[in-house]
Length: 247
Image 1 (cartoon, rainbow, N blue to C red):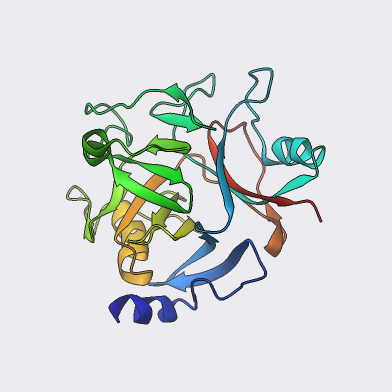
Image 2 (tube, helix red, strand yellow):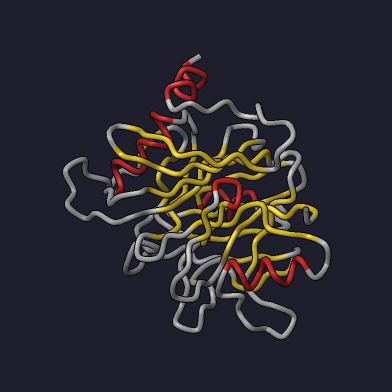
């Protein structure tokens, strides 16, 4: 019941739009505006993206979408999905089409990625799950697509223990939360600067999601053609998105 009430509070009903691959909406939680994109992970073609066939990073949503259209497909939604090096190679675990590009990084380190516990988004047939890194290493689920980032925002219904409600570290931030059964993934980007505590509470208290993962705060972008939005800027590393037949 708590989860259903929380969803109603931000105006979302998971799975309500049976005709659409993704539902993207602008919503407010606790005085901050967010864009939320809800994906039915049990039904939709959710993938990670990094390199083209020549090994060149896609870099931009438009570049990836143009390539998909040449094959009769298109992006229904996309978001940058995790930290990357200057050459746009992923900092942590990354899998695409079952091929592991980068191994799991489990040690503490500098920056947000190393603020343990961190985690990863694991996409398998019929589901998508945010999984804390140590749990992933223990269980080793077979991810068809995956991207690692950090820190975790929500872990089994609890906020990351290092988050402070009065933190003055504020950025536009983006991330993802998943339902307990793995059938729903909600991708969120703030429309103004928020701290980690505020952003994590969106997923736990606003959306009732038990697990959520931070993607980035210096680079946060979304491609949401359903609401006529496609952010542009410096080239991206890993992306996550839903592919659908071109309309």
